[in-house]
Image 1: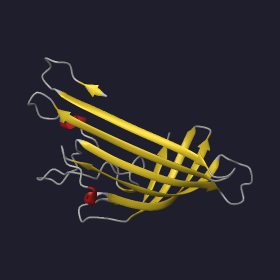
Image 2: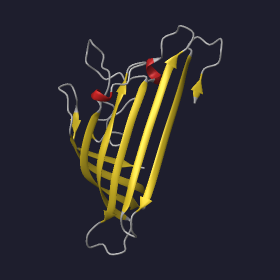
Image 3: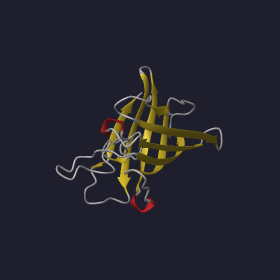
Length: 169
């Protein structure tokens, strides 16, 4: 929860909740579920600050779409400006890389992602974006690395697609 102090020029409140759940199906197979919700509102008749908007799209939320590209856009230059509400859900089925034996540093996964960012006071599940794909996790000596190849399922004309995505950390 984040809230500004009374008497400040910019007044707003934000609350975020993230829940991750890993369920081992067998010694080698795991189901991973993630839910992420965030909402912000202006206080005292002020406008909500743009720099506090939520964003979605990319390897940390809805893979297959370009990083931070989903949700409301500036009407003049069509640039993503984020929104005051964010809804994201991810499901991964994690399994070993064929031929690696007991090496758990490499794991492959298939995923299904859903999510979007919305303007204040408006969550329209009909505007959700979805994607499916496959990826590789590596617990490298410099930290965890993730490579994902996603395919958007509910693409709209203004959506920016990025099928191959890489993350370190």
